[in-house]
Length: 414
Image 1 (cartoon, helix red, strand yellow):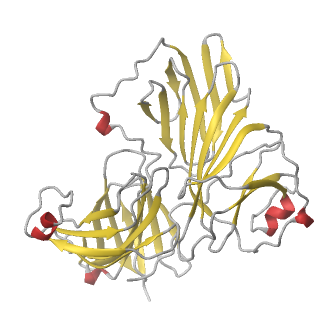
Image 2 (cartoon, rainbow, N blue to C red; image 1 turned 180 degrees about the vertical axis):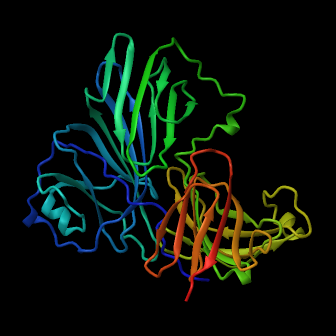
Image 3 (cartoon, rainbow, N blue to C red; image 1 turned 120 degrees about the vertical axis):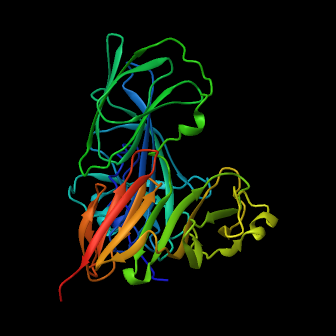
């Protein structure tokens, strides 16, 4: 199978962290590698605290992706003061050490510094970032006070803050109802009764978010009768990249990433779509870089293995990837790779490449084979060209339903 090191997301914006900590001078820092720092999977949750306080709790998920990196640098917003800071390794659930350093130290660590007067938090990672797409997942927490962004006017609270990170949620204080929201968002009531506003920003610009809320009395902390359909889209971690082989073969390589958090879970099942054939399966733990065991089961073998696969027929095919059981408070980031052949959804028609396939994940990418020019995409997409000349299409779907993609391409003239 073709090895793909194709980043699915652009590097996210850093979280502003202001800390009353003694700054270490640049000359006191150990020498760090010059390779540019990269990151992915940024997600921020803002929990609004007491109206009138100007305070909100920030929980910022980010993934360090620079191969071999032992530290991660996060910019501190100038003039900000934060409290109750801590950093946690998502894989182990354990706290990580951090310190404040200057811009020169951050530059030595691979950060592209544009303002030499800013400071950074330097996190010591639990382990070096594994090569070939490995990751180090972090949770950075703080309480932030910003009376310009979060104010109370009469009995109405206002949260007015442009958000550069693409995946966000804002949680209203207990007992408040949403009056207005200017950015298309999911509205979700949490288990404790609070209202959350969540969105995935599919544009290249900041989201100019403006929320207004007012007291609504006690909101019952009751489970919705349609709770199964109310998953927060912006927080979902499943993503996939398809690398198309030449269309005459009807074959494409793919990898899909997934974070498992359920205690005791020790396997992942990929049920092959009807009409497709699978080959070359493999899997890795992205947190450690280790390879995982797998097996391909068909028909009765799935039933005998007591796997949770519905509607098994004699031709149902499933790939099962095995990993160590997830311990409470920990998680594991998995990458499953396979090669598919599907003549119904990927074909050549009168010299035209046709890709006709539905996507269910929030983040999906398709890479055209070498030598092909994109001619049509029925679903809005962002387009880029890889260093080897292949065209890449990224589909970011903020909705909880599937996207029926239809792509065509023509051979590039010699």
